[in-house]
Length: 469
Ligand code: G6P
Image (cartoon, rainbow, N blue to C red; front, top):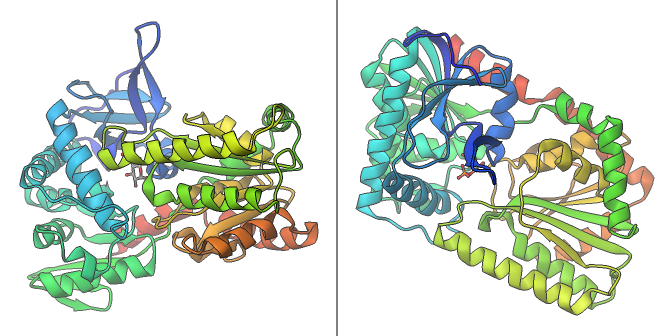
């Protein structure tokens, strides 16, 4: 661990997100340590920032701890402090119990509390101040995700010299749903502090533009918004992964051996099904378990021949709807295993853990069928990671049409997770797919993500930000 040499106001490029790529954790031996943060945002931006000499401003995951800027794996990290109360009101409250469910089709009911909104404003102001303090004259600042939608406005007020981009990693909801938010206008005005607003799908961008047209005093022409003297642009920039890094990991003998060992440890079933998600109600984990248990019930699949590995990484564990989801999922897994397990074999190998990337890649390699059944997902990088590991063009991807990834991975077995019978048929089709059919689909999907990796995503966004057209 070394500290950065740079002084204040010296960075020409700054990324700011709620979370830094690493979380402060306390080890069993009582020493402080760092652990890779959960979620797609860090998966995507980590490789981009490792190759850039910019700085990353964000929270380090521990409440009430003040830390100095530091270097980590080639990255310059500038921590922002959150008090325990701010974690509760801003992060668990407004970000993850108001905005997250509102922006994901109100799958869980969003809660609206004025104290949460107050904390959201206070914390967004603090993030903007931290950036304003570290950015060089005329620097490029790239603000990330729904937790920081007011940062563009605060930042422009403090530093009109900056070029400000914003990227929303999650869906932007339709006007009819967005309309519920008591602070709908203030939030849009916060975003409009940016020069360029990026969204995952064209649909997200047009939802946003419709909301601006309705609630803000601005002129909207195609993807251009004019407010007073300023022009703001909005468009779709589908995010991706570091495809080369994942493919390289999948090609290492250690990871390949580990994949074989995983299958051996499961008793060498003919087919391994895999789900990998943060334990989140948007991911459709219950729908997947329901479909799988019905297939076992009906004898279309048999324990011993098939196993489902479900990695559910811990997430937002103090938020009520996440607690309830965990109870439900674990109850369901217990019932399925109690009913269908034999002494030798298990139906569902459930893992409430997060794993290092190499272990994730080994799991992808070990899986014949990848199940992505999200009810709504901005992109879903797990689907892209799975495809990146299939160098032999084998395996099958069952993919929800409600993910951003479904726009790009057209050759997946696309499903509507609400249609349990359809989901079951697609799972069977994936289990029974012929080598030639799976190769045909996988080859096209691999070409897509090899061409469109996260490096290209960031270059396209940043060059659009610079070009001002
Ligand atoms: C999603 C969000 C990210 C978030 C991640 C993990 O990918 O788009 O902004 O960081 O989930 O969630 P957490 O609340 O643990 O940061």
